[in-house]
Image (cartoon, rainbow, N blue to C red):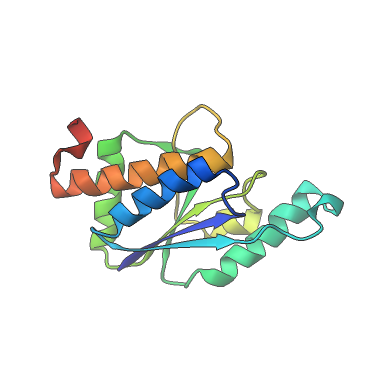
Length: 156
């Protein structure tokens, strides 16, 4: 069982990438974890939002194995507390299936990606840039691992 985080486009700000990298290293102490960053689409200025989402969706869906449990980070997803998110992760980790977490691009997901998804979660009712979501989610994923293990990080 492994957890893969797929994101679209590189993280543009070094201060965000520093924090993300730190949490990703920490997460690897708990679970086999892989980060996949797909490159930005070329010539996207000439594409409609629909076309961008469709092309990004095609790239993403090629990477996801049929048996994997796909979770979208989506504003329409279920909001959880940190403890509930940890419980959700543990339940799905115990199923033995690989978990793929997907952070979409600036315009969200194509209908094909929504159709393939097994679940959707939301970090907040607030809107964050997809760049900032990467750091916030990395911290929450690490926090979930410490909650699962009963470690003190969650309450420090």
